[in-house]
Length: 362
Image (cartoon, rainbow, N blue to C red; front, side, top):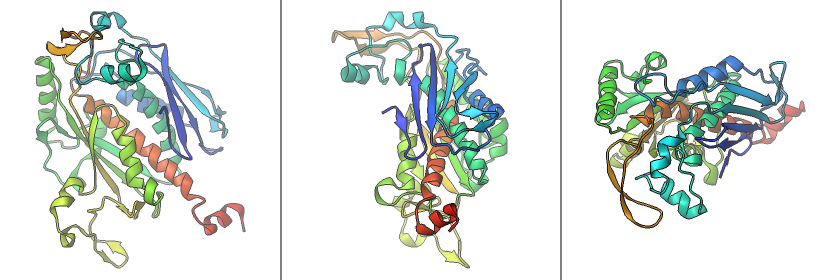
């Protein structure tokens, strides 16, 4: 589906080598101040071509807001944002127009739709994530009104993974780092891993940590729309994400309850093994997530594959690709978490009678 969200929805459109990508955001309350500079700054974080650790596709990624904002204030109508593509090299893909690239969506999209857009993956390209980051930036404007913040960064590249505890990750360093590194001691090693992969005409995976701060208690919808399931749904929908952990995650399966339970004293939690979520609802502690990206499948080594006619072929790619998609992917993770949290914030407004009476002044 091309639409995400329940109360706060966004629909993305566009292809990697089409004229533009963009989104329509519906559900933002009227009266919210719209921060154009913040929107552009967020898009700039995931913009390609900024350094040697990302694809060299040069895009300005300038956001144009077409509707839903008047005199710097959201009007309550749908907010449409478009970003025009400026640096497509479609000719780079002509030699593989009939070949399925290994581990890409080429094969599955063709068998689902019967249409082959070979230009950079078309709709399945990570270029679509521009729209997610734009929508996430608007969601962040709403969250700021409630002092809720979402922070993300990279804590592992390939087999080089930080041994720091969650509370030791350095988000200030990540905000200044070319690769959003959360561990200052490993940043150069992370960069080395990426460049080694690039120089070998290969790519490498990455691990991303996200923290949501100052979230209110009770956000989320129980049973089939738990906050943790909405988060997992959002993050697993990002290109190249293959796993998501919340709180202790996989490690909780190795523990006893006496080790994993979050005990309380004076109405305060003494630990956060649950990652800020209990029963699918926020418990007031920081939400903590880990997202794992596979290596970018676009590499410049000859690889065995098949073509549209079922023939065995060798796939040899040209073009410009991220040697570590998880680096810019961390910006997309941040955006999707913002969207989920903002959606839950709006849904919570009518969760009980007391909330409704506050709204209507009874």
